[in-house]
Length: 144
Image 1 (cartoon, rainbow, N blue to C red):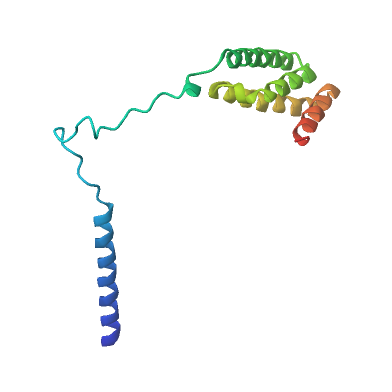
Image 2 (image 1 turned 90 degrees about the horizontal axis):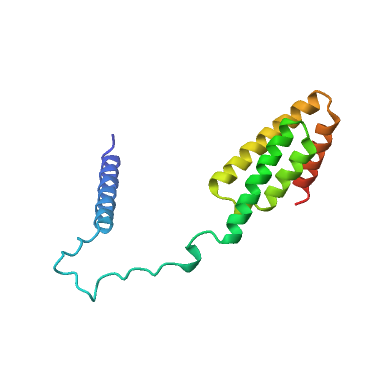
């Protein structure tokens, strides 16, 4: 190897070492103050509770209960192969999605997938009601 190449490699390694050593000093956090150093003046103030984050309102609870009832209706209608009623109930729930809890939203998505699978099976079997319900669901999805 040439001598200049070796010198270049050594210089690059030294520069890289210098950059990494400097960055470690900046990343270190200062030591926390001792218990004696904390006084009433420099204690962090507790944030006041947010009145909007207090919890669901009565209207939200009513909407959640109505959505759960519609979900039950949709499931019952799908079992009875009343696909159009099931689709209408699921679309009504979709309008109230924001009022749902996380668990209710997850349940809604699972039931919607199941309804879509039922519709596909009904269409494959030649059920005209399943075809009409699937078309209604498709139109609702493309209106946005």
